[in-house]
Image (cartoon, rainbow, N blue to C red; front, side, top):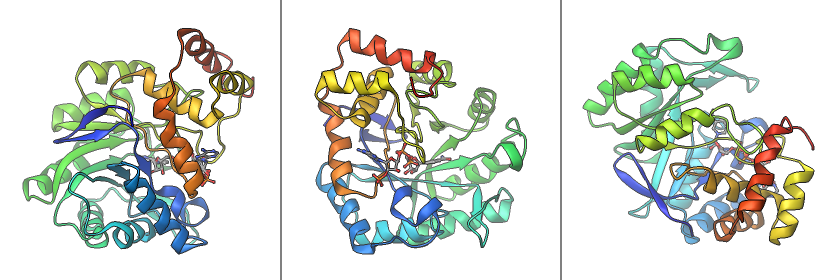
Length: 289
Ligand SMILES: NC(=O)c1ccc[n+]([C@@H]2O[C@H](COP(=O)([O-])OP(=O)(O)OC[C@H]3O[C@@H](n4cnc5c(N)ncnc54)[C@H](OP(=O)(O)O)[C@@H]3O)[C@@H](O)[C@H]2O)c1
């Protein structure tokens, strides 16, 4: 396994696991095979994963219930990071849930479904596009989270789906221990943000590290993977590990074989030549090159 980095008050291995893919399609409803989902979680921990990303709005409630069923009582070193700020409609739609009472309820739902007395890290997930301006102030929701931290229900606070200006605002309101945004080999809008967080020792946790619902596909990536004797997904993860020391990975999978493949990415050694070729994937516009 690769090295570790600080996440709030804990240290976690840089290769973790994201639980969203364990539930039904579009992160809604139960998994097709519950036992297979439980097995993936147990295998992740058995292989040394000590950072699992989740949310009570995956399912809803399903991802957290699977984590509890598979892993509780939790190993001492396991850090479970959750996020709040959204809820699911009856048809699986994603709706904002930013009101004070909704945020408090979400923290209690996570505590109950994960069977925890305190949540180690809670990300406030802002919403963009249809759900409001990407530059909405974070003052109101972060004030609620800071109160819940004061009450001992949360140890550390993070942000997700945010702009650099929102990160700056958030860090003026309370300590922000991590930022979780969309970032991967082909989608690099956060390059400057990652570097500035790295300078301050704040973790950056890219979601969709493998491209998410539409996995990364590029001939540059495939060629690089071939010359490394690896798969394209492994090369994409190895590139992220090389990109900055504060990057913590949470690739998602519902498959034990893919889990093993992803965790082995830590052993790949990217030469400078391969690295500069992979940097070209974004220059090629992130589309199949
Ligand atoms: N903050 C946010 O707004 C937000 C948004 C999205 C996600 N997240 C978090 O980020 C985590 C990671 O994102 P993600 O799971 O959506 O996307 P991802 O990790 O980029 O990719 C997951 C997809 O890649 C496939 N996959 C995984 N490993 C593979 C491999 N070795 N070979 C081929 N295909 C592979 C998975 O299918 P299989 O199941 O078949 O392996 C799945 O379709 C999530 O689990 C969630 O915890 C956060």
